[in-house]
Length: 524
Image 1 (tube, one colour):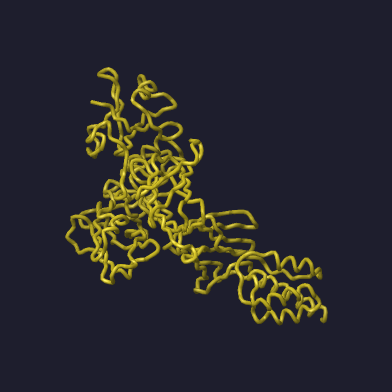
Image 2: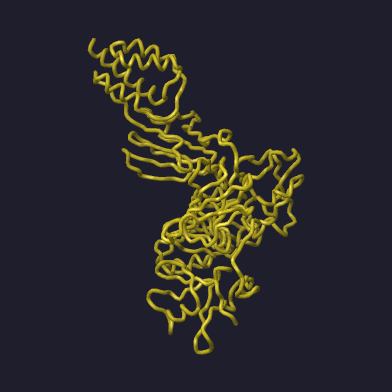
Protein backbone atom coordinates (compact mmCIF):
# COMPACT_ATOMS: atom_id res chain seq x y z
CA UNK A 1 0.00 0.00 0.00
CA UNK A 2 1.32 3.45 -0.90
CA UNK A 3 2.08 5.73 2.01
CA UNK A 4 -0.33 8.54 2.77
CA UNK A 5 1.11 11.86 1.62
CA UNK A 6 -1.03 14.49 3.40
CA UNK A 7 0.18 13.94 6.96
CA UNK A 8 1.01 16.38 9.74
CA UNK A 9 2.93 15.63 12.94
CA UNK A 10 2.65 17.38 16.29
CA UNK A 11 5.93 18.89 17.44
CA UNK A 12 7.08 21.53 19.92
CA UNK A 13 6.13 24.16 17.33
CA UNK A 14 2.69 22.74 16.61
CA UNK A 15 1.40 20.83 13.56
CA UNK A 16 3.79 20.55 10.61
CA UNK A 17 3.81 18.60 7.34
CA UNK A 18 6.00 15.50 7.35
CA UNK A 19 6.88 12.58 5.06
CA UNK A 20 7.05 8.95 6.12
CA UNK A 21 10.82 8.92 5.38
CA UNK A 22 11.49 11.87 7.70
CA UNK A 23 9.17 10.49 10.37
CA UNK A 24 11.00 7.14 10.24
CA UNK A 25 14.34 8.89 10.79
CA UNK A 26 12.90 10.83 13.73
CA UNK A 27 11.35 7.68 15.19
CA UNK A 28 13.78 4.79 14.57
CA UNK A 29 12.44 2.80 17.47
CA UNK A 30 9.88 5.04 19.03
CA UNK A 31 9.73 8.79 19.59
CA UNK A 32 12.28 11.46 20.38
CA UNK A 33 11.85 14.38 22.75
CA UNK A 34 11.17 17.03 20.09
CA UNK A 35 8.51 14.94 18.32
CA UNK A 36 5.37 13.37 19.75
CA UNK A 37 4.61 10.55 17.36
CA UNK A 38 1.14 12.10 17.00
CA UNK A 39 0.20 12.06 13.30
CA UNK A 40 -2.88 13.45 11.59
CA UNK A 41 -4.30 13.11 8.07
CA UNK A 42 -4.95 16.59 6.69
CA UNK A 43 -7.64 15.37 4.33
CA UNK A 44 -9.97 13.62 6.77
CA UNK A 45 -8.77 14.94 10.13
CA UNK A 46 -8.22 11.49 11.64
CA UNK A 47 -5.29 9.82 13.34
CA UNK A 48 -2.56 8.26 11.19
CA UNK A 49 -0.22 5.39 12.09
CA UNK A 50 3.47 5.10 11.16
CA UNK A 51 3.95 1.39 10.45
CA UNK A 52 6.55 -0.82 12.09
CA UNK A 53 9.78 -1.38 10.14
CA UNK A 54 9.91 -5.11 11.01
CA UNK A 55 7.22 -5.89 8.42
CA UNK A 56 7.87 -3.60 5.44
CA UNK A 57 9.13 -0.19 4.46
CA UNK A 58 7.70 2.24 6.98
CA UNK A 59 4.74 4.24 5.74
CA UNK A 60 1.69 6.12 6.95
CA UNK A 61 -1.70 4.44 6.94
CA UNK A 62 -5.13 4.95 8.45
CA UNK A 63 -6.22 2.88 11.40
CA UNK A 64 -8.70 0.09 10.71
CA UNK A 65 -10.72 1.44 13.64
CA UNK A 66 -11.18 4.96 12.28
CA UNK A 67 -14.76 6.28 12.30
CA UNK A 68 -14.83 7.37 8.65
CA UNK A 69 -13.58 5.42 5.64
CA UNK A 70 -14.13 8.35 3.26
CA UNK A 71 -10.66 9.88 3.24
CA UNK A 72 -10.10 11.31 -0.29
CA UNK A 73 -6.60 9.85 -0.45
CA UNK A 74 -7.92 6.39 0.43
CA UNK A 75 -10.57 6.69 -2.31
CA UNK A 76 -8.64 8.52 -5.05
CA UNK A 77 -5.07 7.48 -4.27
CA UNK A 78 -1.84 9.25 -3.31
CA UNK A 79 -2.03 11.59 -6.31
CA UNK A 80 -5.04 13.38 -4.85
CA UNK A 81 -4.51 17.16 -4.76
CA UNK A 82 -6.05 19.45 -2.15
CA UNK A 83 -8.73 21.68 -3.60
CA UNK A 84 -12.17 23.06 -2.86
CA UNK A 85 -14.84 24.82 -4.90
CA UNK A 86 -17.17 27.77 -4.34
CA UNK A 87 -19.90 25.32 -3.23
CA UNK A 88 -17.73 24.16 -0.32
CA UNK A 89 -17.96 27.41 1.64
CA UNK A 90 -20.41 26.37 4.35
CA UNK A 91 -22.89 28.89 5.69
CA UNK A 92 -22.19 29.83 9.31
CA UNK A 93 -24.21 28.18 12.05
CA UNK A 94 -24.17 29.55 15.57
CA UNK A 95 -25.45 28.46 18.95
CA UNK A 96 -27.53 31.12 20.72
CA UNK A 97 -29.36 31.83 24.00
CA UNK A 98 -27.13 29.46 25.95
CA UNK A 99 -28.25 28.87 29.54
CA UNK A 100 -28.18 26.08 32.12
CA UNK A 101 -31.33 24.58 30.61
CA UNK A 102 -31.47 25.70 27.00
CA UNK A 103 -29.79 26.60 23.72
CA UNK A 104 -30.88 26.97 20.09
CA UNK A 105 -29.33 27.31 16.63
CA UNK A 106 -29.27 29.88 13.84
CA UNK A 107 -28.06 29.72 10.23
CA UNK A 108 -26.46 32.82 8.77
CA UNK A 109 -27.44 33.74 5.21
CA UNK A 110 -24.61 35.88 3.88
CA UNK A 111 -25.52 38.82 1.66
CA UNK A 112 -26.74 37.78 -1.79
CA UNK A 113 -28.27 39.63 -4.78
CA UNK A 114 -31.94 39.41 -3.75
CA UNK A 115 -33.08 43.05 -3.88
CA UNK A 116 -34.45 42.74 -7.42
CA UNK A 117 -36.30 39.44 -6.82
CA UNK A 118 -40.09 39.33 -6.66
CA UNK A 119 -42.04 39.70 -3.41
CA UNK A 120 -43.03 36.03 -3.41
CA UNK A 121 -39.39 34.89 -3.15
CA UNK A 122 -38.81 32.78 -0.04
CA UNK A 123 -36.25 30.50 1.61
CA UNK A 124 -36.96 27.01 2.97
CA UNK A 125 -34.53 25.39 5.44
CA UNK A 126 -35.06 21.95 6.99
CA UNK A 127 -33.07 19.09 8.52
CA UNK A 128 -32.04 16.64 5.79
CA UNK A 129 -34.09 13.45 5.69
CA UNK A 130 -36.64 14.69 8.23
CA UNK A 131 -40.30 14.87 7.26
CA UNK A 132 -41.09 17.84 9.54
CA UNK A 133 -42.26 21.06 7.82
CA UNK A 134 -39.41 23.36 6.76
CA UNK A 135 -38.58 26.72 8.29
CA UNK A 136 -39.90 29.25 5.75
CA UNK A 137 -38.59 32.82 5.52
CA UNK A 138 -40.02 35.43 3.19
CA UNK A 139 -38.03 38.08 1.38
CA UNK A 140 -38.95 40.79 3.91
CA UNK A 141 -37.14 38.81 6.63
CA UNK A 142 -33.76 38.99 4.84
CA UNK A 143 -31.18 41.78 4.99
CA UNK A 144 -30.23 43.09 1.57
CA UNK A 145 -26.76 44.40 2.46
CA UNK A 146 -25.56 42.29 5.40
CA UNK A 147 -25.82 38.81 6.91
CA UNK A 148 -29.18 37.49 8.17
CA UNK A 149 -29.30 34.94 10.98
CA UNK A 150 -32.39 32.70 10.89
CA UNK A 151 -33.54 30.46 13.73
CA UNK A 152 -33.59 26.72 12.99
CA UNK A 153 -34.83 25.48 16.35
CA UNK A 154 -33.33 23.79 19.38
CA UNK A 155 -32.67 20.27 18.14
CA UNK A 156 -29.31 19.64 16.46
CA UNK A 157 -29.09 17.79 13.10
CA UNK A 158 -26.11 16.64 11.04
CA UNK A 159 -27.26 18.17 7.73
CA UNK A 160 -29.69 20.85 6.58
CA UNK A 161 -31.07 21.52 3.12
CA UNK A 162 -31.71 24.99 1.71
CA UNK A 163 -34.21 25.58 -1.09
CA UNK A 164 -35.71 28.77 -2.45
CA UNK A 165 -38.80 29.58 -4.48
CA UNK A 166 -38.95 32.17 -7.25
CA UNK A 167 -35.20 32.76 -7.02
CA UNK A 168 -32.30 32.66 -9.49
CA UNK A 169 -29.50 30.14 -10.06
CA UNK A 170 -26.85 32.74 -9.10
CA UNK A 171 -27.99 32.46 -5.48
CA UNK A 172 -26.28 29.06 -5.32
CA UNK A 173 -22.95 30.91 -5.50
CA UNK A 174 -23.83 32.29 -2.06
CA UNK A 175 -26.17 29.74 -0.47
CA UNK A 176 -25.37 26.02 -0.98
CA UNK A 177 -28.15 23.46 -1.32
CA UNK A 178 -26.79 21.49 1.65
CA UNK A 179 -25.37 22.83 4.91
CA UNK A 180 -23.18 20.89 7.33
CA UNK A 181 -24.81 20.86 10.74
CA UNK A 182 -23.96 19.42 14.16
CA UNK A 183 -21.98 16.19 14.49
CA UNK A 184 -23.30 13.89 17.24
CA UNK A 185 -19.69 12.86 17.92
CA UNK A 186 -18.96 16.40 19.07
CA UNK A 187 -18.99 19.91 17.53
CA UNK A 188 -17.08 22.96 18.72
CA UNK A 189 -18.37 26.56 18.75
CA UNK A 190 -16.48 29.75 19.45
CA UNK A 191 -17.89 30.98 22.78
CA UNK A 192 -17.53 34.72 22.10
CA UNK A 193 -19.57 34.67 18.87
CA UNK A 194 -21.39 31.34 19.13
CA UNK A 195 -20.19 30.39 15.61
CA UNK A 196 -19.64 26.72 14.79
CA UNK A 197 -16.07 25.85 13.93
CA UNK A 198 -15.49 24.40 10.47
CA UNK A 199 -13.71 21.12 9.80
CA UNK A 200 -9.94 21.50 10.40
CA UNK A 201 -10.49 24.88 12.11
CA UNK A 202 -7.77 26.46 14.21
CA UNK A 203 -8.19 26.60 17.99
CA UNK A 204 -6.04 28.54 20.44
CA UNK A 205 -4.90 28.13 24.03
CA UNK A 206 -6.79 30.10 26.71
CA UNK A 207 -9.68 30.67 24.31
CA UNK A 208 -13.07 29.30 25.40
CA UNK A 209 -15.20 27.06 23.18
CA UNK A 210 -18.55 25.31 23.53
CA UNK A 211 -18.48 21.57 22.91
CA UNK A 212 -21.84 19.96 22.06
CA UNK A 213 -22.18 16.21 21.70
CA UNK A 214 -24.81 13.53 21.86
CA UNK A 215 -24.76 11.65 25.14
CA UNK A 216 -22.03 12.48 27.64
CA UNK A 217 -18.34 13.19 27.46
CA UNK A 218 -16.52 10.53 29.45
CA UNK A 219 -13.84 12.68 30.91
CA UNK A 220 -10.53 11.62 32.26
CA UNK A 221 -8.10 13.75 34.20
CA UNK A 222 -6.45 16.38 31.96
CA UNK A 223 -3.51 18.55 32.93
CA UNK A 224 -3.95 21.12 30.13
CA UNK A 225 -7.68 20.98 29.28
CA UNK A 226 -10.48 22.64 31.27
CA UNK A 227 -13.98 21.14 30.90
CA UNK A 228 -17.18 22.40 32.52
CA UNK A 229 -20.71 21.14 31.88
CA UNK A 230 -23.15 23.89 30.89
CA UNK A 231 -26.46 22.28 29.92
CA UNK A 232 -28.28 19.05 29.05
CA UNK A 233 -31.26 18.69 26.72
CA UNK A 234 -33.43 15.72 25.82
CA UNK A 235 -34.92 15.32 22.31
CA UNK A 236 -36.99 12.13 22.24
CA UNK A 237 -34.58 9.30 22.91
CA UNK A 238 -31.54 11.52 22.31
CA UNK A 239 -29.73 13.34 25.09
CA UNK A 240 -27.30 16.15 24.19
CA UNK A 241 -24.79 17.80 26.53
CA UNK A 242 -23.12 21.18 26.18
CA UNK A 243 -19.71 21.84 27.74
CA UNK A 244 -17.30 24.75 28.03
CA UNK A 245 -13.75 23.73 27.08
CA UNK A 246 -10.39 25.46 26.78
CA UNK A 247 -6.70 24.56 26.59
CA UNK A 248 -4.38 25.95 29.24
CA UNK A 249 -1.14 24.87 27.55
CA UNK A 250 0.31 24.29 24.09
CA UNK A 251 0.76 20.56 24.60
CA UNK A 252 0.37 17.20 22.89
CA UNK A 253 -2.46 16.37 25.30
CA UNK A 254 -4.39 19.48 24.24
CA UNK A 255 -3.63 18.80 20.57
CA UNK A 256 -5.03 15.25 20.88
CA UNK A 257 -8.16 16.53 22.63
CA UNK A 258 -9.05 18.96 19.83
CA UNK A 259 -7.99 16.53 17.08
CA UNK A 260 -10.75 14.21 18.30
CA UNK A 261 -13.13 16.94 17.06
CA UNK A 262 -11.16 17.59 13.84
CA UNK A 263 -9.63 20.88 14.93
CA UNK A 264 -5.99 21.99 15.11
CA UNK A 265 -4.38 23.55 18.15
CA UNK A 266 -2.20 26.43 16.96
CA UNK A 267 -0.69 29.73 18.04
CA UNK A 268 -1.01 31.12 14.47
CA UNK A 269 -4.71 30.91 13.49
CA UNK A 270 -5.69 31.60 9.89
CA UNK A 271 -7.21 35.05 9.33
CA UNK A 272 -8.16 37.29 6.39
CA UNK A 273 -7.78 41.07 6.70
CA UNK A 274 -8.42 43.66 3.95
CA UNK A 275 -5.90 46.49 4.30
CA UNK A 276 -6.22 48.90 1.35
CA UNK A 277 -7.68 50.89 -0.39
CA UNK A 278 -10.71 52.35 1.41
CA UNK A 279 -13.31 49.72 2.39
CA UNK A 280 -16.17 49.04 4.78
CA UNK A 281 -16.01 45.62 6.45
CA UNK A 282 -18.99 43.65 7.71
CA UNK A 283 -19.88 40.05 8.50
CA UNK A 284 -18.58 38.03 5.50
CA UNK A 285 -18.56 41.17 3.33
CA UNK A 286 -16.06 43.87 2.31
CA UNK A 287 -17.57 46.82 0.44
CA UNK A 288 -15.17 48.67 -1.85
CA UNK A 289 -15.11 50.84 -4.96
CA UNK A 290 -11.79 49.96 -6.61
CA UNK A 291 -10.52 47.64 -9.35
CA UNK A 292 -8.24 45.81 -6.92
CA UNK A 293 -7.99 45.13 -3.18
CA UNK A 294 -5.10 44.15 -0.92
CA UNK A 295 -5.58 41.30 1.56
CA UNK A 296 -3.36 40.18 4.44
CA UNK A 297 -3.45 36.43 5.18
CA UNK A 298 -2.11 35.25 8.53
CA UNK A 299 -1.55 31.76 9.89
CA UNK A 300 -1.06 28.32 8.37
CA UNK A 301 -3.13 28.69 5.20
CA UNK A 302 -2.07 26.47 2.32
CA UNK A 303 -4.38 28.05 -0.28
CA UNK A 304 -5.74 31.48 -1.17
CA UNK A 305 -8.57 31.28 -3.70
CA UNK A 306 -11.00 33.50 -5.58
CA UNK A 307 -14.38 32.72 -7.15
CA UNK A 308 -14.89 33.60 -9.96
CA UNK A 309 -11.21 33.06 -10.70
CA UNK A 310 -9.26 36.28 -11.06
CA UNK A 311 -5.66 37.53 -11.13
CA UNK A 312 -3.97 37.33 -7.71
CA UNK A 313 -0.44 38.57 -7.03
CA UNK A 314 1.45 37.62 -3.88
CA UNK A 315 3.53 40.67 -2.94
CA UNK A 316 5.82 39.13 -0.32
CA UNK A 317 7.36 35.68 0.09
CA UNK A 318 8.94 35.73 3.55
CA UNK A 319 7.50 32.72 5.37
CA UNK A 320 8.02 34.47 8.71
CA UNK A 321 5.57 37.26 7.81
CA UNK A 322 1.86 37.34 6.93
CA UNK A 323 1.27 37.08 3.18
CA UNK A 324 0.05 40.15 1.32
CA UNK A 325 -2.01 39.64 -1.86
CA UNK A 326 -3.32 42.00 -4.50
CA UNK A 327 -6.65 40.76 -5.85
CA UNK A 328 -7.99 42.04 -9.16
CA UNK A 329 -11.74 42.55 -8.70
CA UNK A 330 -13.26 41.26 -11.93
CA UNK A 331 -16.90 41.07 -10.86
CA UNK A 332 -19.23 42.96 -8.56
CA UNK A 333 -19.32 40.04 -6.11
CA UNK A 334 -15.97 38.28 -5.61
CA UNK A 335 -15.55 35.39 -3.17
CA UNK A 336 -12.15 35.37 -1.38
CA UNK A 337 -11.06 32.50 0.85
CA UNK A 338 -8.07 31.07 2.68
CA UNK A 339 -7.86 27.47 3.78
CA UNK A 340 -6.09 24.15 3.75
CA UNK A 341 -8.13 21.12 2.80
CA UNK A 342 -11.27 23.26 3.16
CA UNK A 343 -12.06 26.95 3.32
CA UNK A 344 -11.33 28.18 6.86
CA UNK A 345 -11.94 31.92 6.42
CA UNK A 346 -13.81 33.62 3.60
CA UNK A 347 -15.48 36.88 2.67
CA UNK A 348 -17.14 38.52 -0.34
CA UNK A 349 -15.90 41.65 -2.07
CA UNK A 350 -18.88 43.79 -3.10
CA UNK A 351 -18.06 46.64 -5.43
CA UNK A 352 -20.27 49.64 -4.59
CA UNK A 353 -19.83 53.42 -4.48
CA UNK A 354 -18.71 54.02 -0.90
CA UNK A 355 -20.55 57.32 -0.89
CA UNK A 356 -23.76 55.27 -0.94
CA UNK A 357 -22.88 52.74 1.72
CA UNK A 358 -21.22 55.28 4.02
CA UNK A 359 -17.57 55.51 5.01
CA UNK A 360 -18.49 55.22 8.67
CA UNK A 361 -20.59 52.11 9.42
CA UNK A 362 -23.71 52.94 11.42
CA UNK A 363 -23.40 52.48 15.17
CA UNK A 364 -26.00 53.13 17.85
CA UNK A 365 -24.96 53.78 21.43
CA UNK A 366 -27.62 54.30 24.09
CA UNK A 367 -28.11 54.08 27.84
CA UNK A 368 -30.41 51.44 29.30
CA UNK A 369 -33.44 53.69 28.85
CA UNK A 370 -32.79 53.93 25.10
CA UNK A 371 -31.53 57.54 25.12
CA UNK A 372 -28.83 58.12 22.51
CA UNK A 373 -25.32 58.88 23.78
CA UNK A 374 -23.38 61.33 21.66
CA UNK A 375 -19.61 60.89 21.26
CA UNK A 376 -16.99 63.28 22.63
CA UNK A 377 -15.99 64.35 26.10
CA UNK A 378 -18.61 64.36 28.88
CA UNK A 379 -18.75 64.87 32.65
CA UNK A 380 -21.96 62.81 33.01
CA UNK A 381 -21.98 59.05 33.49
CA UNK A 382 -24.88 57.15 31.83
CA UNK A 383 -27.75 55.63 33.82
CA UNK A 384 -26.51 52.65 35.89
CA UNK A 385 -23.03 53.41 34.48
CA UNK A 386 -23.92 51.22 31.49
CA UNK A 387 -23.89 51.67 27.69
CA UNK A 388 -25.61 49.52 25.06
CA UNK A 389 -23.82 49.17 21.69
CA UNK A 390 -25.36 48.12 18.37
CA UNK A 391 -23.49 48.09 15.06
CA UNK A 392 -24.28 47.21 11.45
CA UNK A 393 -20.77 45.69 11.09
CA UNK A 394 -18.42 43.56 13.17
CA UNK A 395 -15.91 45.57 15.14
CA UNK A 396 -14.16 45.99 18.46
CA UNK A 397 -14.61 48.00 21.65
CA UNK A 398 -11.40 49.38 23.14
CA UNK A 399 -11.76 50.43 26.78
CA UNK A 400 -9.05 52.63 28.31
CA UNK A 401 -8.58 53.98 31.81
CA UNK A 402 -6.48 57.12 32.15
CA UNK A 403 -5.11 56.60 28.61
CA UNK A 404 -4.09 52.96 29.25
CA UNK A 405 -5.91 50.16 27.38
CA UNK A 406 -7.45 47.80 29.94
CA UNK A 407 -9.80 45.66 27.83
CA UNK A 408 -10.84 44.82 24.27
CA UNK A 409 -14.19 43.26 23.34
CA UNK A 410 -15.55 42.00 20.03
CA UNK A 411 -18.80 43.59 18.82
CA UNK A 412 -20.88 41.67 16.29
CA UNK A 413 -23.16 43.08 13.61
CA UNK A 414 -26.33 41.45 14.86
CA UNK A 415 -25.67 41.16 18.59
CA UNK A 416 -26.15 44.09 21.05
CA UNK A 417 -23.31 44.45 23.55
CA UNK A 418 -23.74 45.83 27.07
CA UNK A 419 -20.80 47.57 28.77
CA UNK A 420 -21.21 48.29 32.48
CA UNK A 421 -19.06 49.54 35.34
CA UNK A 422 -18.20 52.85 33.64
CA UNK A 423 -16.44 55.52 35.70
CA UNK A 424 -14.63 58.81 35.33
CA UNK A 425 -11.28 58.46 33.59
CA UNK A 426 -12.63 55.77 31.27
CA UNK A 427 -12.52 56.15 27.47
CA UNK A 428 -14.45 53.87 25.08
CA UNK A 429 -13.76 53.57 21.34
CA UNK A 430 -15.71 51.66 18.66
CA UNK A 431 -13.29 50.43 15.99
CA UNK A 432 -14.56 48.94 12.71
CA UNK A 433 -11.98 47.81 10.19
CA UNK A 434 -9.08 50.19 10.74
CA UNK A 435 -11.21 53.21 11.72
CA UNK A 436 -12.35 54.67 15.04
CA UNK A 437 -16.02 55.41 14.26
CA UNK A 438 -17.16 56.48 17.75
CA UNK A 439 -15.42 57.58 20.95
CA UNK A 440 -16.40 58.93 24.34
CA UNK A 441 -14.31 60.16 27.31
CA UNK A 442 -15.80 60.35 30.80
CA UNK A 443 -14.11 63.18 32.72
CA UNK A 444 -15.10 64.91 35.94
CA UNK A 445 -16.12 68.55 35.51
CA UNK A 446 -13.37 70.90 36.54
CA UNK A 447 -13.96 74.52 37.41
CA UNK A 448 -12.06 76.86 35.10
CA UNK A 449 -10.06 79.27 37.22
CA UNK A 450 -7.62 80.50 34.63
CA UNK A 451 -7.86 83.84 32.88
CA UNK A 452 -5.40 82.82 30.19
CA UNK A 453 -7.45 83.39 27.04
CA UNK A 454 -4.89 81.70 24.78
CA UNK A 455 -5.03 78.55 26.91
CA UNK A 456 -8.84 78.48 26.81
CA UNK A 457 -8.85 79.02 23.04
CA UNK A 458 -6.38 76.18 22.60
CA UNK A 459 -8.57 73.88 24.71
CA UNK A 460 -11.74 74.49 22.70
CA UNK A 461 -9.94 74.36 19.34
CA UNK A 462 -7.87 71.20 19.85
CA UNK A 463 -10.69 68.69 19.34
CA UNK A 464 -11.74 65.90 17.00
CA UNK A 465 -15.00 64.33 15.82
CA UNK A 466 -18.15 65.50 14.06
CA UNK A 467 -19.75 68.93 13.72
CA UNK A 468 -23.25 70.05 14.75
CA UNK A 469 -25.39 73.09 13.80
CA UNK A 470 -24.51 76.08 16.00
CA UNK A 471 -26.90 75.94 19.04
CA UNK A 472 -28.83 79.06 20.09
CA UNK A 473 -27.07 78.96 23.46
CA UNK A 474 -23.86 80.04 21.72
CA UNK A 475 -25.23 83.60 21.66
CA UNK A 476 -25.67 83.54 25.44
CA UNK A 477 -22.12 82.25 25.86
CA UNK A 478 -20.91 85.00 23.47
CA UNK A 479 -22.47 87.76 25.57
CA UNK A 480 -21.17 86.27 28.80
CA UNK A 481 -17.56 86.07 27.60
CA UNK A 482 -17.16 89.67 26.43
CA UNK A 483 -13.87 89.92 28.37
CA UNK A 484 -12.35 87.32 26.02
CA UNK A 485 -12.20 89.04 22.59
CA UNK A 486 -10.34 86.22 20.78
CA UNK A 487 -12.81 83.63 22.05
CA UNK A 488 -15.73 85.89 21.11
CA UNK A 489 -14.29 86.18 17.60
CA UNK A 490 -14.03 82.37 17.42
CA UNK A 491 -17.66 81.96 18.61
CA UNK A 492 -18.90 84.58 16.11
CA UNK A 493 -17.23 82.61 13.31
CA UNK A 494 -19.03 79.42 14.40
CA UNK A 495 -22.39 81.27 14.53
CA UNK A 496 -21.81 82.76 11.08
CA UNK A 497 -20.95 79.36 9.59
CA UNK A 498 -23.79 77.70 11.60
CA UNK A 499 -21.40 74.90 12.54
CA UNK A 500 -19.33 73.95 15.57
CA UNK A 501 -17.33 70.88 16.54
CA UNK A 502 -19.46 68.94 19.04
CA UNK A 503 -16.58 68.36 21.44
CA UNK A 504 -15.59 72.04 21.21
CA UNK A 505 -19.13 73.04 22.16
CA UNK A 506 -19.12 70.73 25.20
CA UNK A 507 -15.80 72.13 26.40
CA UNK A 508 -16.96 75.69 25.81
CA UNK A 509 -20.07 75.01 27.91
CA UNK A 510 -17.95 73.66 30.78
CA UNK A 511 -15.61 76.68 30.61
CA UNK A 512 -18.52 79.14 30.51
CA UNK A 513 -20.17 77.50 33.55
CA UNK A 514 -16.87 77.68 35.40
CA UNK A 515 -16.46 81.37 34.61
CA UNK A 516 -20.02 82.09 35.81
CA UNK A 517 -19.40 80.16 39.02
CA UNK A 518 -16.22 82.14 39.72
CA UNK A 519 -18.02 85.45 39.10
CA UNK A 520 -20.84 84.51 41.48
CA UNK A 521 -18.27 83.49 44.08
CA UNK A 522 -16.48 86.86 43.75
CA UNK A 523 -19.79 88.71 44.27
CA UNK A 524 -20.48 86.71 47.39
